[in-house]
Length: 359
Ligand code: PMV
Image (cartoon, rainbow, N blue to C red; front, top):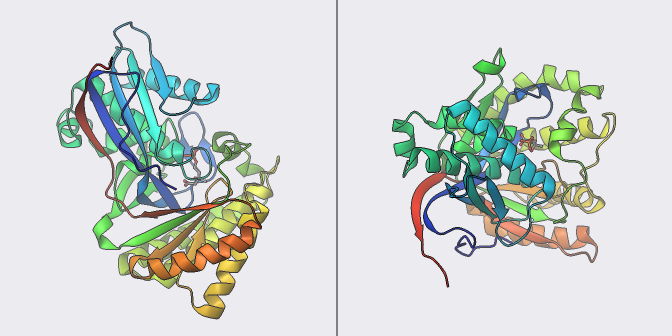
């Protein structure tokens, strides 16, 4: 269930910077930080940028000299609004721009439910703010003004780590590096390299009880955390090679093991965090059974929420969709669920737009 209308801001008019930033799904997860203040991850991660699940954000210089952020169609929680305002302060500090902004934002999918709304949200906020301050009318223009993808990724990362991967399309590698300053975000392959789909089974639209910012901090208390870090370089190598050679079975095997391992770290940390729900857990087992017994060509992954991302190749998407509709119906046991049909995407965009005064 993607809200696929063309959204228009309701509180802003005039010439606005409009940014569109996609969400991304991590194939190798970022879980745990070496330094929370500097947003330095414990490990490298690798993601696929999506196309349908996205955040659109509009920004303009504030006439009244006061920052204002609002969410189109619903209300920001106090915590979300505070995080967005803090990010604007951080961006001003880092860039030297001083003006306050009015910002309105919209998600095409339910936020805070493990579909990485913080990734698309902070990527879109960073792009809209830099666009409004610098006057850039496109990403290319922004790059000529000193805000290329690397600089933007570094800025967006401070709002939410995974946001830095939403600045590129296709398959994206966030390297932790040897120091907080040497981390980097690079494109491993473009969206046209491999047409993969991500069918997102949404079992719950509720905001999660423990946010990922908080839960990252618990990771290091898990006895499974250090063994995980030690084994990750090998897994990253396999996943990179599977992407490069388009080996779907090799990719799927590692991606499933990776998701389960991250959730095991979450569940064995102190305090422990359970993002998996009974319905999602039933669904994972059923998908594996369907693959083994019927050859359903699909693999799962999950982020910090109860919803399940089912990966498949485009040519099998109809078959997989039909299969998972039946599996999810059983797993949900009379509860509602929906499926977002998403796929690999080409990355963010920025432009200027005119929104006329409404009477
Ligand atoms: O960017 P954050 O702080 O929301 O952390 C994201 C963590 C996961 O989504 C669970 C994994 C990832 O790499 O995206």
